[in-house]
Length: 133
Image: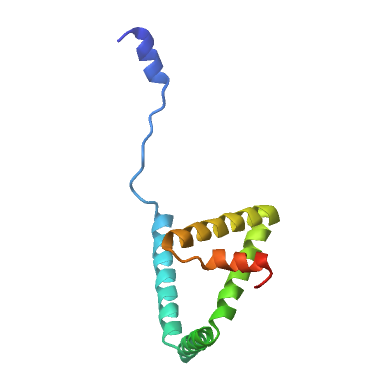
């Protein structure tokens, strides 16, 4: 090494990591552990409470009621969901982008039905364009 490299090495600060904790850090660690234990006990007590069990029972009952409604009214739920998706699409990406996506979906469904041998969508549009005959 040259003298120039030695001078450069002397100017570079050396980093060191202290591994021994300060006394204040030890006290904070004990308080932190105590806080975690207290929070854990609070969660355990909340889960075992009657209010929580009633809320879970309510959610299960609500889910069972919603599922029964969906079985009785499948088209209402399906078209309601389609409306929700369209509303989200229109609000996020805009009306015209949503229309373009819908056109591509319809064209893809038509092509898929033709390839499957089921021309339901094609027959629908044929009847629609012929005037319902």
